[in-house]
Length: 131
Image 1: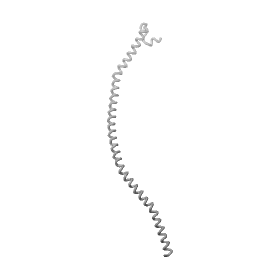
Image 2: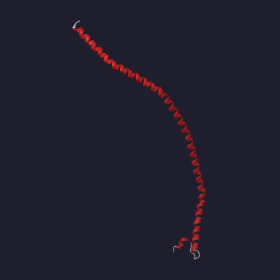
Image 3: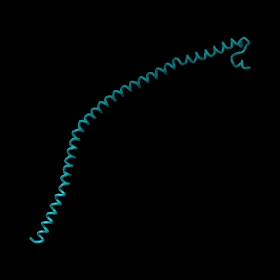
Image 4: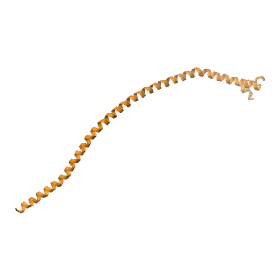
C-alpha cells in the first residue's frame, strides 16, 4: 500500500464518520416530521366534531333570533297601538278637561270675591281689587 492509498482510506473513513454524524440529526428531523404529521391528523379528526357542534349551535341561535325578532315586532306594534290610544284619549278628554279647569278657576275667583265682599261693592274680579 502506498501513501496515496492510505490517504484515500483515511479520507474515506473521515467521510463515513461525517455521514454518520449527519445522519443522526436527519433521522431525528424525520421523527419530528412524523410526529407533526400525526398531530395534524389528530387535530383534523378532533376539529371536525367541534365544527359540526359549532354549526349546530349557530343554527339554533339563528332560530332563537328569528323568534326574538317576531316578539320584538309584536311589541313594537303594541307600543304603536298604545301610543295611538293615548293620543286619542288625550284629544277626547283633554278639551273638556281644559274647559273644566277654566270653569273651576273662574268659580274659585268668584267665590273668593263673594267672601271678601268685592261683588257687593261693585268690583269685578281680581284686577279691580288691586286698586
